[in-house]
Image 1 (cartoon, protein in one colour):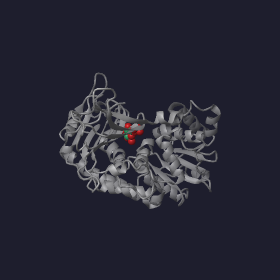
Image 2: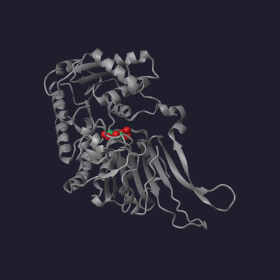
Image 3: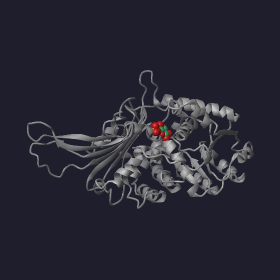
Image 4: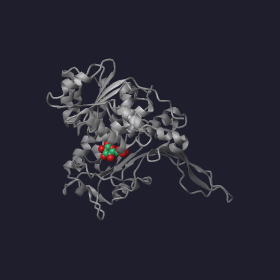
Length: 484
Ligand code: BG6
């Protein structure tokens, strides 16, 4: 049932930061899986470029270990791994100097797609872009891929956009938000725009509210230094949750094409109301027995950074006027669970006497785990005893619906890298989108920094601080349970 794999054009992909964590965990094992599937053809090359002095053999060994550790190896034979490794090369490069650039230039081939993945600190983007240009390694057809964090506020994001724009056109820049590469996120668009059922109801006449939850069980241990300067708002809301919000709320684009989709997303971000601080709850996880607190993990005993945030937002347009969007994300929560739930309004009038219960249709789009979609509908409870109504889910769990084929569902990074090679920017953020998202986020962050807002402590393994529950209760609503 899963669609046929269509090979992409041959490419030379240079990964700056090729020995880093992201490259080892996601990018390289992902490329290996694309090679196994036949989507990356044997004519393609991957060149690791990083500061470490190592040769191509050392890099291949590192990649072989990464494949073993981070997936893809169990199904494949040694032969396939060896074939993939033969497609790898390595250059020790000095991003701020001259070392390695001539060698890299010598490795690039004509007649294939050239892509450059900047898996490095944003402070190096300018140096890399400039040297790629200076050494004529990049041309007007080349693509560059950049990762989040894309700035930490509007000003820094604008500066990064300006640096990249000096040497590359917007059509060459691929800003990754890996949430856009997740299978279910794309399915959200298929559900909305591929069915006649939902779109007529997708507005303030029928939708009571929308909840978006991205809950994680991991803490920030190991990346505390980065995270403490960021917090849940910058790390998750400004990008991942904002993208989900855009896809759920945007107007139908006239075509499923990059700029059509991104224009619609941009309109949503620009229509977001400023959020009053009474509608934002920030939290920090507390210690739990031997499990350290957020402040211990961040090694900052006086940290005011949030590891949890919940908020109520509004979109100022005709479709969504009056419909609250509740967003929530946090670390060390009770389960790893991400979902978007569209909660429809109550029936205006019930014809079933004696049925006092509140029946609601809810469309839940589960991103992870158990990717799938379920629609809560009201039916008659089976058996005798009159007309008693119950709510049941019409469940479409992908692994059940697709069987073995579900295992072949591509990981977000793999899909996005293949899109870079294909030159398809639909699932990447445009510069103006990122800036608009910061323009909305900045005043909220500035406000709590000015007030020295102290995040509320919450228990590890919980659903966040009680105030987050109150945020909904005050409105006569409740969060959905966080279930793994
Ligand atoms: C990253 C954040 O962008 O997304 C992390 O920096 C977070 O803090 C991660 O853990 C979550 O991604 P996923 O795909 O595991 O939900």
